[in-house]
Length: 171
Image (cartoon, rainbow, N blue to C red; front, side, top):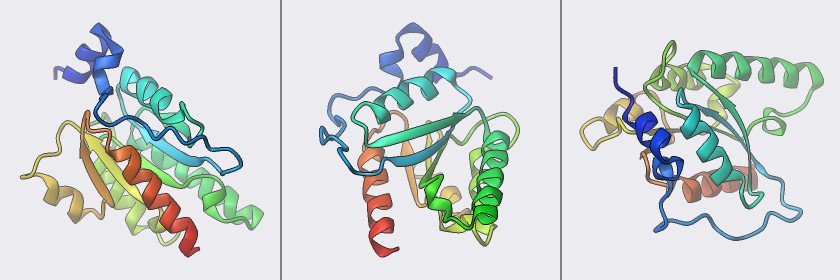
């Protein structure tokens, strides 16, 4: 299958997800605890470009993996470690950002597994994919996605900040 995002990103990585109409909030994190993101996407270009974009002001700290299987293994490890150490899971991860179409476990399946897990279900899951259309949004809703954004819509950055900050205030 042809990966249009990869082709565009290979030609010019800034075109892959850059959007000057929605710049990242220039607020510097300061003593604020960075929002810990687990990002799953099979495109290396998207992972590295989005990571750079999210981390540029210190608001986010991103851990990237190449697919849903790796994300699930990483989340399971974080959950087990937090239980063993008696620490809250949010010390390790605040939010999941996932592409939908990936080899192995896709983003829908990953989201469903997270939302079915008694501990992980509290984590917000945001789907970020070129597959999200008005007609397909119901699929993300059916698996419990907290947000869905079409690439290259970077309004997701503000959504992620607001979602985690709201969750932190209610904790």
